[in-house]
Image (cartoon, rainbow, N blue to C red; front, side, top):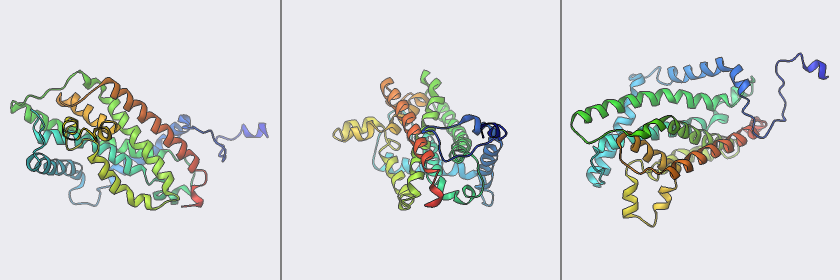
Length: 286
């Protein structure tokens, strides 16, 4: 049998390691990964009137609403930073995480048909969501840069700082958090379908405790008893760090950065373990 097994290119077994990302197999299926990424980018808005403009409309309209409600009506200060730019910066970072989370949280239920017919590394599906969302994130970054330059010429006191070199790491942390949480929720929804209904509501609540529409300093000054709920949220550290390196405003500590990086990586590993364990028998419960 050992000699016969050498003739096979692939060996599919129900027994796998606890953590088995298998980069070699994913690389072997790279063409399929690229195909899925292209499909996600092209087909999402293929039969819509505005097409890819929806990538721009959503963050712009959300920023306008946040500016009207939180800054004009609720009078939440943003210092020397224009409120619209302050909100657009936070929303741009938040959107990438939330899209990764929502896109990977229904991996098993949304792809049960194809998973039951053909074999390929299942982790390709959440990976393609994270990669395709980078395209949307890039477009929204361009819009952020355009408004940044506009306000710069309006003589507002805004400037990036040296923390900008950490930008790729912040993107990686957002991807890890979205991927880890999404794969965990995807595994749980194979048995508990009401989690998929809860996702939209929970994501909205999460945004409001992640310092997206307000600076962390406001929570520290006005709600000191509840500041821990926001401060120790890893997404708050990402949003605040994102604003700090681009607008030179907000709260950044090296301890918070290491805390968020470690937690995002651990959540990714946990999600990967749960995902690998669930994919062995999920087809029987979906």
